[in-house]
View 1 (spheres, rainbow, N blue to C red):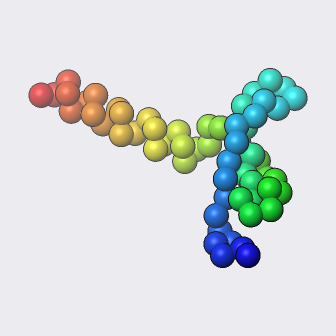
View 2 (view 1 turned 30 degrees about the horizontal axis):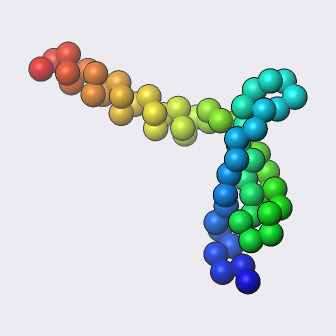
Length: 61
């Protein structure tokens, strides 16, 4: 039944400290496999770098 073992669904939730986190869920069983903060270094770089490059290019042009 588990045709794609690397797949996961995610849901955002509030943790006990009031912050936001992602829960990673097995789409076949509904089991929560773990959680991560919403803003990870990879997400920060992926969001910030392209936007800052575009702004820098626009300022030069």
